[in-house]
Image 1 (cartoon, one colour):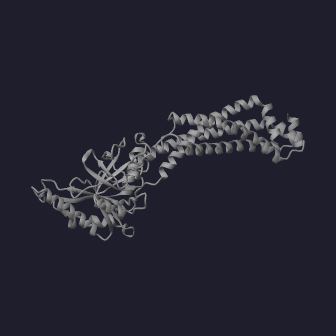
Image 2 (tube, helix red, strand yellow):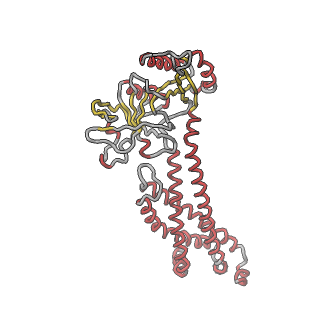
Image 3 (cartoon, one colour):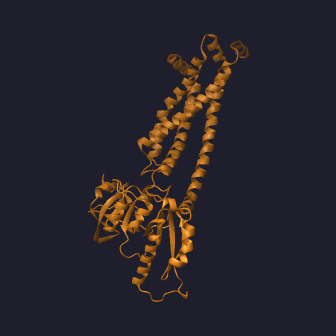
Length: 417
């Protein structure tokens, strides 16, 4: 069978050469589509590093100065006391598991704050998210450490004045060699352009994403304790116990006037994080959906093109199929020969297409993901899936017309020729 296959390809080298060229071009285009789908799937399904289920954002407002209830000339100590009372009253509610305050810190935030870090002479480049929070903020979103640290353990570290860094903090920095974030554990570092005070790195967090669709440098994070003063904490968040989530928003709103008017502070709004997340990722979802629709249309055209090419090619061989059947060839042998020819051509052009794919990745024509445009694991997965899809298209394009040809009486097929 192998000798027949190679002999058949050799005898039809002109048509096979053009077919191989078509397979080569299609393979490169298919790889680009498969690679984009691979990145999109991997990005959406990688761990977020936080959990917003049963979480709510509490908007704490300030009374207007013209309000009759407004307390004039309140000192900063009074304002701080009001915040602590508000926080304490929220934490005492039986349905609330944890209350946290932060500055530009919660997931899906439309604003953020950046910072720097320096250890010895090493300082990572690029944007680093600074999250200044109270310890229980960790418990609200359930951050965890790479060494198995629980939210409770991480909260204790913040209480001691230690900081937390994400595991990808030092990624994509060629100027620091092979050093990783875990190498900073227990080290004293400078943060936020302040070289007069050091912070101890208490733990390395599992990667904390900014949102479901965010990747790369925007995921690099430093978590700092907000300190004893929460005067600039602009975000209040709570986690509700799972079995007490149904009427939480309704019940809390009912108690706002009685229990949550503290000094000049009051609860202005309660927003579930499900709604915040949906609003934040809506544009990303729409963009991804449009890209997938366009690529789906392109895939359909590629499928129909390859299907048509091999369908027509197989129909043109009706006489050859009839002769082989008259000569004693079985249907299985004919199927193997025809499909084997198509798969052999695909196998020959795949290494050439792989060379082009690698160069496209080298020149950053494909999609950025996980710190770069190329990795052998990602490349081989994309090329392998591309090969399997094209092999399926070829098999279908050959098998259906071949099956129909073999149902015709050999004598009739030869007479029609």
